[in-house]
Length: 177
Ligand SMILES: [Mg+2]
Ligand SMILES: [Zn+2]
Image (cartoon, rainbow, N blue to C red; front, side):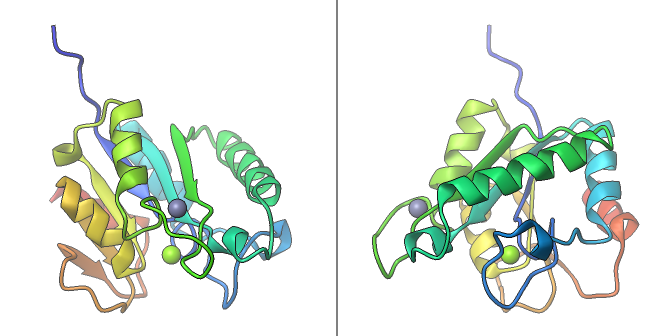
């Protein structure tokens, strides 16, 4: 008997979960949630989506901060979401930076997406990726997810785009259209 596959909402971190900063974000004090992320993930959870975070953290590869800082920040983030009744199913990050090493996991590479699909028994065709950079969209398209880009980054591959101002309702309407 085939295992039942789940739908998932894949999210980029910086610029989607939290407000993007000019540099890298690894300190709690610099981690400010976007106004739409809690209502969006709450509604997606109600609609049966698993939540998957896929983030490039090249600051690790550059030696600006370590895995410990990222994992502590993500633990705090999970606690903040849990306080609102929201659970992340997978949090995956690429610690590499092309200036110091090559890898297949840094977006637009698709390895982290493939890993999440396998580990969480996800059906990519029922799933979404929301990012703010074209490099978030490219690996998702490769796997067959629907894609939404937030903001003005050049991206011919994205299915849909929202420019500010928008709120969680605007995103959910697009996902359910
Ligand atoms: Mg981003
Ligand atoms: Zn990597």
